[in-house]
Length: 352
Image (tube, rainbow, N blue to C red; front, side, top):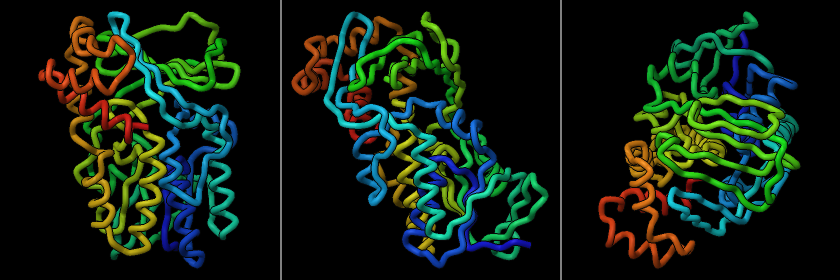
């Protein structure tokens, strides 16, 4: 039977980053990264998101940096019922996510890391090690295990026995329309059931998405995507020497749906916890961070209850388009929306 120091299940943002940092810090460590997808299927799956990442996200995972950048983003625009348009300057990128992942995996492999195509069928604990059975028929033992296998995580179900608080199904369309490459656009409203509509530049095209069934697109469709976004976090993300990261840990932000940043950073933090052999270190990081602040889920639920009149009232003071002074006024004039306003401030800091 094969045996490794660490097995990582899932080659997305969290798993790939964890693999890189393990071999970056400990080249002698025997690490296996398995992913069920390759080639065009891998590319298509990882295009099923807006591919927007803030500049801050890459500061948190140095020496990795923004690569395969399609657009440099410096402006976030929000459109609300009643004609309110708000904007904030915020630096980030639209990346080619499949190519970014391949680049990081190549650096991991150059340090002796192993990447193999396989699918995990079951995971269990046997004599303080993890026993993994895969679709190829192979069985693997590992001292440490990282579940980076997405919203329907087999590692989470078999080892932790838990499920995300919420799963938001979304649809996204790559359409034949071009928008300015330096900004991303969000449209709010009751029809989005607590979520929103997004429009992100994608080369000569545009990505338009929203919660499933809440809107339509009129443009010519180049590609159609469906994606589940698990959110709300989990009570436990480290058990024994097993760690859950990214979507497997329901880390995407409930208010912004952003998940790439938390996936990248959780991969690094899980790797560091393994190197220190300290699962509590990983739990403490997550539960003390702003990323899992309960105001985000409360704000999502609050928005889901609002009608368009409520959206208009909560955004009325921002009609000028500026944010700072209207925000201070709003906190005093509309106390019923204070939790929404504070969640929005936090989301501007850690939401993508």
